[in-house]
Image 1 (cartoon, one colour):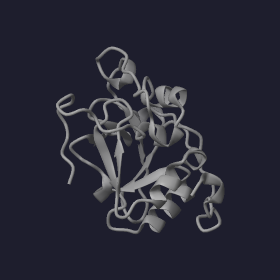
Image 2 (image 1 turned 60 degrees about the vertical axis):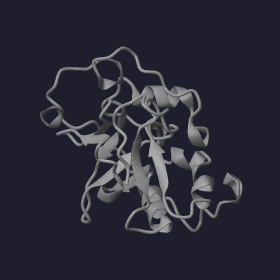
Image 3 (image 1 turned 90 degrees about the horizontal axis):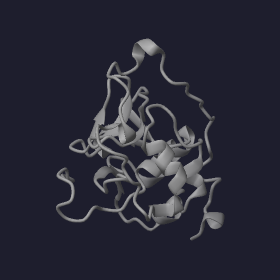
Image 4 (image 1 turned 90 degrees about the vertical axis):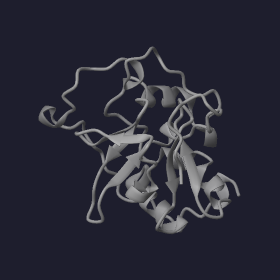
Length: 187
């Protein structure tokens, strides 16, 4: 199935929400960080990102960024939904820089529920049980980052609890080679 044949009416795009950076009193109080939000030199985006994600957009979002995101609905412009249709149980999402597993979805809900919620938000929307917690952390201001510093998105809780609104370009990586990075627990 290609993008043009996907049944978008089955999953209508919800009301677009535009979020400003949090006010200064809610921001992480740590000093500005170097490229990739870490103390290391500039980190490179993987050469081949999944779903046809734009390399320039991924570099802009994943590195040297604390608050901004790809535009709402960007994931709908990729081949992501086509690949998701071929998944029999869950899909794994990997850091676009390190290749570490960050999310596994859907868990505790159907693929349809995952897609509907993501479309309603305009970004991939993960729940608590879908996070690989050994590789993801949530900062005090709600920013979601990988343990290696890649900006992923933000926690935007709703009545059901934490909801991690994540940029697809941040999780479009491929699995890392064995032994390159230390964090790898995935259930």
